[in-house]
Structure formats: structure tokens, C-alpha cells
Amino acid sequence: MKAVTWQGKRSVSVIEVPDPVIQEPTDAIIRITSTALCGSDLHLYEVLGPYMNRGDIIGHEPMGIVEEVGPGVSNLKRGDRVVIPFQIACGSCFMCRRGLQTQCEVTQVREKGSGAPLFGYSELYGSVPGAQAEYLRVPHADYGPIKVGSELPDERYLFLSDILPTAWQGVQYANVPDGGTLAVYGLGPVGQFAARIGTHLGYRVIGVEPVAERRALAAKHGAEVLDLTKDVAEELREMTDGRGPDSVVDAVGMEAHGSTVGSLAQTAVGFLPDKLAQKAMETAGTDRLSALHGSIDAVRRGGTVSLSGVYGGMASPMPMMEMFDKQLHLSMGQANVKRWVDDLIPLVEDPSDPLGVMDLTTHRAGLEEAPDLYEKFQKKDDGCIKVVFTPGAN
Image (cartoon, rainbow, N blue to C red; front, side, top):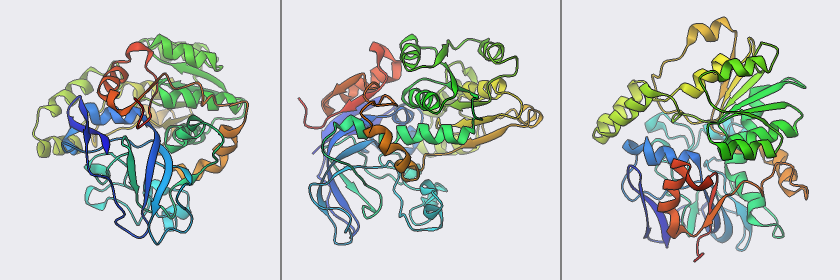
């Protein structure tokens, strides 16, 4: 089969690899019909290379058709249409029963001190072959896959694999009061959905983003928008009676704009051999923190900052005095996809498309165009906000 593979920093290629096969009784094999490029994939492309191996299959936002199931899978059959959550969880352990599937105690990557494994996401999360491919082996298929109907197009459902529940959880964790104001830092795919969810739930939403096309798309769906400037926190306070927004979702993460020290640290780590680079990332401050620091600055006293963007540094500096003085609440974590599916399915199937799932994808292509589209997505060229690959397309 064809698959998108990691070949080095800022280098991916589409190559022929062996088809996946059933390895465990609870496995399934899925023929992928749509698979998306996530902002988190750019962290592999740029920063997390020390945890990657040349030839790793990447990607973690797929849906498709069940081709084969192991003898331990009774909930699926050949021909079922499914969305695959980006994390692999058992569904029955202490953590899964509490809706914390990303912390699954059966599948945790304990040798790296990490939570549940993720498809296509480095040694940190199990080195599981990813989903930007024609076929995917799905472990724990007796729990993970989300069965969906056959009438609606893929993009009604595809984003249930990651970015839609990620945004939903980010807004839920933000604890916005009724009628309150939610600021969203970063209007990439997750930020777009976080802004739309906030509006859908009746909040005032203000999006902060340096790219004009992304601001325009968020404004189209009801958000007020601001450019990312050095004065943006003060602008947010001026718009909220001098206090700042009640809650902020940081949908940017470790590669924020305007973080000179973090950028230099990430570049320096990139020149180290993998084992030394891993050690540096685990013991030094290597994140670009301007979005997080900006969120902490802007949010009102007693407010909540919710982190949906991915951070990777173990010792990145935090403004603890300011956080303590402002009595802030901080929530974060990988999205627990299955926890939110029952809330989201009615919204993605609603004919009115209240979250605009059909108005996010800007680029559609076959897998062969992945190298070009990774570069465009990282550089934010050509209005690239969300890429969806359709394996088998010409």
C-alpha cells in the first residue's frame, strides 16, 4: 500500500509499504477513505524528530471501511463505516471508565512515561503505524472505532477522529460562565472549531490569529477577531470592561509565533543526535510559549486557561507568580475522543451543520501530494487551513 512516511526534519515522502495484517484478536483492518493532516503532525515535521524513525507512517485522523476483524471483535463487521479516534484505549480500565481514554491503563506507553498510544505519533506514543495510508491496523477495535451511517459525506464525520473532540474538550475545560467571553488563541483547525463551539454554546468569542485568512474564516462563523500583536492582551481587556476574557483556549501549542528563545532552543535541539535531543527535550525548556504566556496575561483574574495545543518541553518556564496572583485555573490534555462522541454526533449529522464541519477543509488531494501540502500547511501558504487526503484519488 501507499503511505506518507517521515524521512527527516521537514521531509515526508509517499512510498510503498507492506499492507497491515491482523496481529491480535481485537484488531481490525480499515480501508481508509479520508485521512486528514493535523497541526500536531507539524510537530513531527519540525520539532519532535528526535522521537521519529525514518520510514515511520504518520497521520492520526482517519475514517474508512472495515475490511477485516479479528476473532475478538464482535461489534464490527466487514463493510461497516467507521471513524477511528487518534488514541488507542481499552474502554474498560479505571481511566477509560472515567472518560480519560488518553490515560488508558492497559495501553499506556510506560517506557516513555506517556499516556495511551497514538496513531502515527513517534516513540513518545508507541510508534504505532499511522493513518495517512491506504489501510490501517486498528488495535482494540472492540472499543475504539465509531460506527457512522452511510448517507452523509466523509467530512461530516471525519473530524470526530481528533480536532472536533479536541476543540469541544478545550471549550468544556475552559469553564466559560453562562453568557461569558471566551478568547481563542490560534485559529488553525482546532481554534476554528473551538471558536464555533463557543458561539454555538452562546458565548462571546474573540479569536486571536496573525493570518488574515484564518481570521476571516472565524469571523464568518460568528467570532470577533484580533490580529496577534504585542498589544493584543490589552486589546482583549479593553473589549471586556478592563478585566480580560473569562476563559482562554490556547489552540497553538509548542510552535507559537513570537517565541524567539523557544525557537532557538527547538532549532538547537534539531542539530543534536536523537538520544541527546530526546534528553534535551525532557530536561530543558524547549517550547515556544508566547501563546500560553499571552493567554495567562489576557485572561481575567479568577479565570481559566485551557490548553488544546500540544506542548513537548519538560522544563519550559512558566510565570508561576502571575498565575498564583491571578488565582487562575489551568486545564489541559489530549482529547478523550470517546467521552465526547455522544455530544458531537447529533451536531455533525444536523442538516444545518451548526459547527460548520463542511466549511473547514481548504485543500483536498491524494496521498501523492502530501509532501507539497505539508510544506504549504506549515508555511500557511495558499490559504491552507485544513488538508484532507483521499487515498486512491488521482
